[in-house]
Length: 151
Figure 1 (cartoon, rainbow, N blue to C red):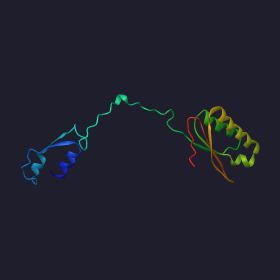
Figure 2 (spheres, one colour; figure 1 turned 30 degrees about the vertical axis):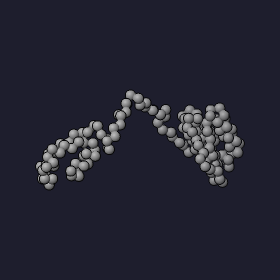
Figure 3 (cartoon, rainbow, N blue to C red; figure 1 turned 135 degrees about the horizontal axis):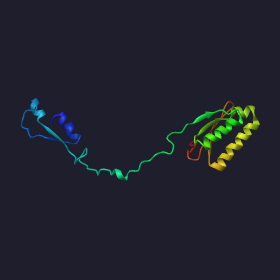
Figure 4 (cartoon, rainbow, N blue to C red; figure 1 turned 45 degrees about the horizontal axis):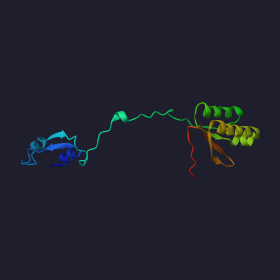
């Protein structure tokens, strides 16, 4: 049996070697082999039952992708846009509150209250990503998008 016969046999084809007494170096003897699919064997002789495709359920996501936006709010209108993205569009948002914290403490406090309300009333999630002198990053997501802190 030559290399190609071995490969075809390993792929599940039966090798019919009716001309086994002929010289292997003869090209006509190589072409005289007939190959038939061997449906009874799977790589090593183990036969497994074929899956029934009627039993398989198709899972279709409710939303095909999530658009995560980084927003640096400067006004309350920007905060309202963030609330709309989370509650209406169901998109997570990364929020940098450093500008509001430094330039407008009243708006920063109001933004914090809106975040608390979203968490309490609508099940939104908030996770602090980074807080230093330059950035105050928070990721906010709707209830269906789970945030997990693994630190």
